Length: 314
Image 1: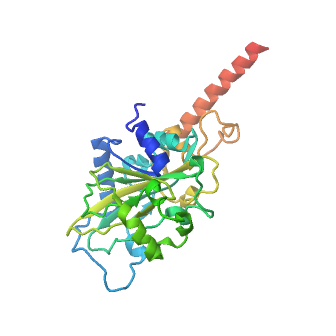
Image 2: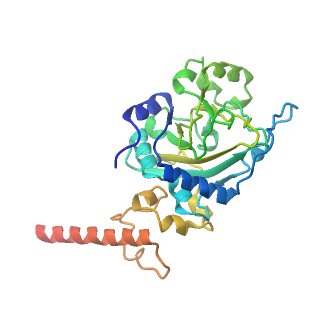
Image 3: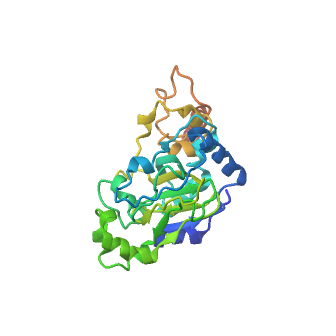
C-alpha cells in the first residue's frame, strides 16, 4: 500500500503530539461518508449562531447532541472509514507497533443554532484512562478527528496547542487536572493556539495529553461533519473507552461483511492463523460473515501448510 502521509507527519506527531494531515482519503470516499452522515443524523439547515454570554455554562449534552458510536444503519463507507487502511498504517507507525486496537469511533454532526460549541482548552486523557498520560510513545494513543465537510474558522474547527509549545509553560504537567476551569492556564495557552481548519478530508491527529478545544460555529446556516477514531497499542489496558460487545445490538453485520481481516483485528477479532480459530470456534450453527469465513479458510490453509512442513521435517 502506498502511504498517503509522510515520515515527517509521523515524526511531527511523535514530537509535538499533534499534526494536521490532508490527502489521505479519495474524493469518492469523502462524498460517500458525507452522504452517510446525512442519512444517520438527517441534514439540518443550521440556524443563527448561538453565543452564550449570559454566564450559564453550555452542557456536554448540548455540544454532543449528534455524536454516536459506530456501527450505523448505512453504507460501509461511514462504518469503515475509522479503520481505513491509511489510518491503521499511520497509527501503527505513530505508536511504533504492528498491533493496534480501535477503542473509540463516532460520527459527529454539528449545526449552527443548536448551541454554543465554544470550549476551554482541555486534554482528553480524563475519560480515556484511569491513570495519567505516559510520555512513552507506545503507551499513548492517537486520535483522528476527520472532517467530511469543508471547515473554515466559521465552521467550528478544533484548536490545539502542540506538546512542544505547552511544555514551555512552567509546571504544565501539574495543570492537567481540572484544567478547563483554570483561567490562568487558559491565558497561558492562548498565544500558542493553532487551528485545524481545512477542506473536507482534513485530519487532525493528536494524543490524549494534547491541549485542544472546540470553537463555535459562527456562520448562519452552517454545519460540520466529522468522524473520530482512536487507536492504542494492542494489550495496552491503561487506555480504553468503548467496549464494542456492549453495543452488540447495532448493525455489526455491515462491518463484518465488508471489512478485511486486518480491519476486523482492530476491533479485537483474531487474524487468520491465530490459535483462537480451532475446531470449537469454527463449528457454529449461526451464519458467518464473509470476512470470518475468509479468516477460517486462511487459518485452515496456514494450518495445512504447517502440518505439511512438520511432516517433511520428520
